[in-house]
Image (cartoon, rainbow, N blue to C red; front, side, top):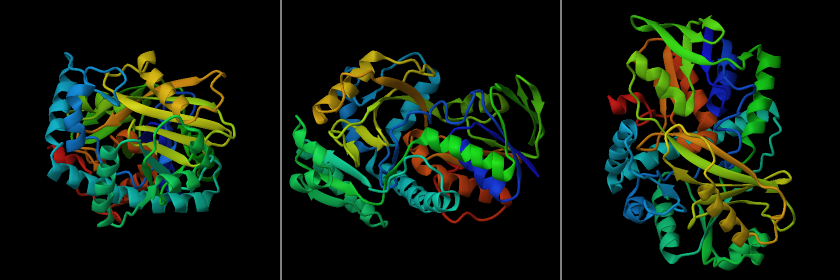
Length: 416
């Protein structure tokens, strides 16, 4: 049976691997010349299974008014004449209640814990090389308010099998000695020992190569997807720049661009691009060896071999992926304060990407309103974290099996 996967990012490649491993004939279509060349290219690097608090939560709601007028805010959500963004924003605000945030958190955490297991299995089975580290993620805090919020949220997640260790400032420095040179105030931290990190772009290309050589997966690079052809309750073809391509089943994994193909065939999903930024520099001894999350500035740091990746901020600017220097500046400034001894005199590689975000937080997976079209999209900032688990879930649905985890709150039914 033939399956076409639309998109060759983290979700697309991992889904192709999962399906090919189960015996399907898989073709992957992507407009880029290689896998993982867009949103997955230079992300923060964290496999943050323990990070399950959705953006839509009461603490963010209280900060939105002041953030709206700051270019250096962690989340820039400026009103504009963009109807999809307005509808998304209204739904986002509705999900900022404690009750809804807790429900969404549990759903995200369930998928995260499952993804951790599936990623560990994948790494063991494939021996891929992608600067993978299992040292966990160290969260640091510079304000009592942010630290208290994190500890309270940790107490909630402990009920569902996710435990992070609360640390004093001295314990934080013991785990990451490079922080001893910081110009910032650190009052404490938390160690998410279940978490990991790795280079998503390296992973995508290594896994795509394995899929081709071991399972015969075909990757159609440099091919633009123009539309989906339908007949009744089925997709009959993908219309591309190289002509029509057909299969028995299709998987949508085009991230922020998914709605552009789904809307014309009657599938209305609230996926909106949340632009994120990152910088990459050559690492030295004054850079961290443990992946970090700055809980006050919402910025993450990952040591990827001989490189340091720093990523953060969220900006709503439609499908514009150009780099806004005003959004890069706070990332560079925060990184220099935290690690002043790093090689800041060298050229800094800058990157911007569009994260496919849902207003409530969890992704959209499973069957669509068409009998042979399946969804694996809308993972927001957690595509790297959730890729392995999501691929296994969607493959189970395609095979008619009951997934190993409940899909409650992770299908398109919640929006119908």
